Length: 208
Image 1 (tube, rainbow, N blue to C red):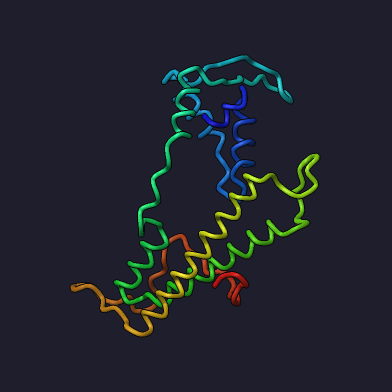
Image 2: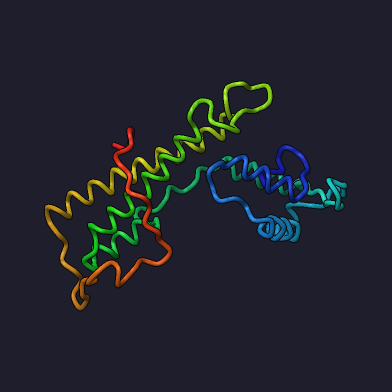
């Protein structure tokens, strides 16, 4: 709804604005845009404002209702709950790997993935990176978008510190598998779903 706080928008514009607000994140699917707008319209928070023709088909323009405006103001007047400790997917996998005798291999794999992602973000935020200019600014992307990227880099850096500390502690004191569980014999025989091993990378400046 905050995307509509600055004025009415049609669905395509909402998707484009969302992706610009959160660079480097997962692009918003068009289906999710219209499903969310339909739910907000049902709840009386959004209403159809007009219909415009933009590059072909007619598009419905949506606007906040007074109740929607109040909801956005209330949302922005309250702090967000901090992320629950240990709730991230990679932490859950790391714990599972340690509990099944595969901790060092998984931590090394995850560290490589984190380093690759941090390197990509640093390239995107480097001065003169292609496609970052904004009309009339001359100094790169706008401040909120830049801060989103900086938050992502800081978060990855904190994760890397944890991964490295965990690897050092496991090397000094290997955890025993849970009772009734058998260590995984070989990584190749038991791949972790949905993970691809990235190319080996060296230490990245700023990762420590």
